[in-house]
Length: 267
Image 1 (cartoon, rainbow, N blue to C red):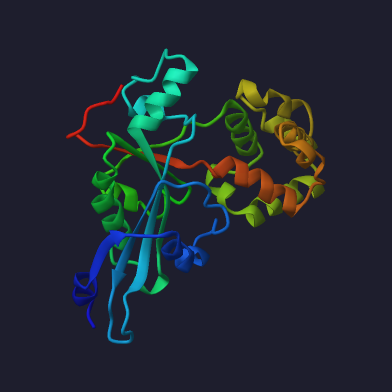
Image 2: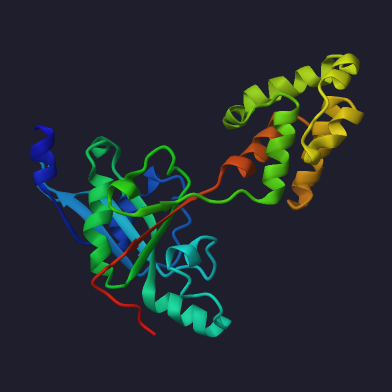
């Protein structure tokens, strides 16, 4: 059966939690669905089966109270409101895409984008939003017609990224904990007495680097960064700690939104 035949044989229907559970194992957060307000399933009948199979599912939920880029996406209509009014307005006008799952055999066919684009109007609200950690890798939300807003970097993250750069760990290295750890280990074992004078850090944020060894400097900055992560601040140096730190530096979900031009804001 060719690709065109497969996609023609699929239809989007109102789904159930059973449809979600049938595909949940293919999502990295399978056990954390939480409350939801709508599920749609992508189903089809194939030669290998006499029944309809669920090959994709999308889950919509009411939005959380806070989202960093929601005000920008909605044109500032939520700014300046008291908490109660703001929450009521959010619940009336916005739905969040909580999950989009495609069964592995049917991926790379554009079905995720189809699920999103065909179901957003069915929610009957002016705004749809989504957060995607993998938005950089698989931008199917954009293909579905959503607008992308990249997250801003927090001051603490920006400071540590700059500190890594100051000791030779480039930003592109931060996606690979093994590479970062190897560079940190080299800093620890090498002598830096002469290099410390030659490589004065021009960035005011990292000015301490010129006054102490580079490893001591980056160790200080990593320890400072960890202070807001409870018991994690006590993690000893090593690959596990490096993995955790990098997960917090690079795991910044991309925000997507879509506006239904046929619907006005409900007050």
